Length: 91
Image (cartoon, rainbow, N blue to C red; front, side, top):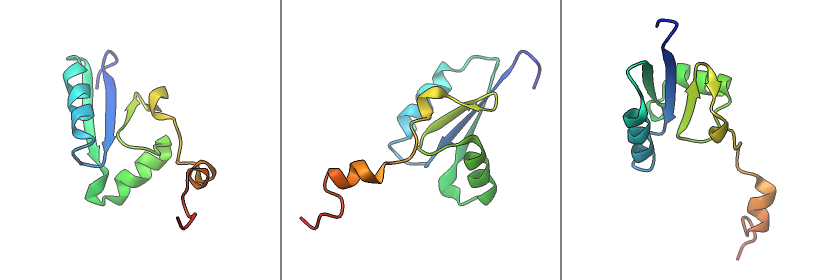
């Protein structure tokens, strides 16, 4: 990868929910974007570790030049919020 190229890594669950977003990212990429799509549903432990190293908590997620994009930093589900919404309440 030359100095003028950007490495774009897209982490996905390989599902129909992720596909439109992955397709949009691929369509938006320019000829200087080296795009790699990582399907975490493959069970590849190396990809899982890589995603964890970048701080990926939700999918799809995009890493540009080694940094998780700010739009993908929302974090994990908050159990307190989920419980307040009824999780575990035994309706």
